Length: 172
Image (cartoon, rainbow, N blue to C red; front, side):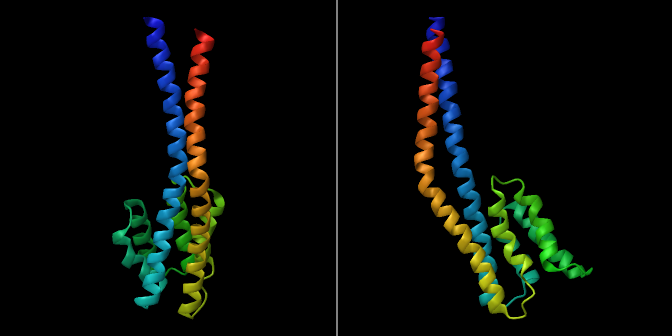
C-alpha cells in the first residue's frame, strides 16, 4: 500500500514538473504578446493622436499592466522634468527593470527597446516606422514560438510522465 502511494506521489511530481515546463514555454509567448500590444498602442498614439513619444507614454500608461504602468508614467514624468537625458536613454533605463522580470531573451528586449534608440527623427512617420518595425520583429518571433510551443509542450508533458514511470519502475 505504501509502495503504491509512493509511486503515485513520484508520478504526480514528475507530471507536475512536465506541466510546469509546458507553462514556461507559454510564458514567453504571453510576454511577447504584451510587448506587441504596447508598441501598437504607442504607434496608435503617434499616428492618430499626433502626440510626441514622451506624451504617448503618459497617455497609454493607464491601460497597461501595473509594472508597465509605473514605468511608463515614470518615463513621462522624467521627460517633463527635462534634465537633459534623451527619450531613448530614459525609456531604456525604465523599461530594462521591468523587462528583466519577464521570461524574455536578450533579442526580444532589443526588438522592444530598439525604436527608442532611434528617436531622433523629427518626422512622426519615421518614428512610426521604427515602432512598427519593432512590433513586426516581436510578432515574427511570437508566431515562430507558437508553432514550436505545442510540440515542446507535449514533449515536456510526455517526458515528465515517462520519467515518472521510469523512476517508479527503477525504485519498485
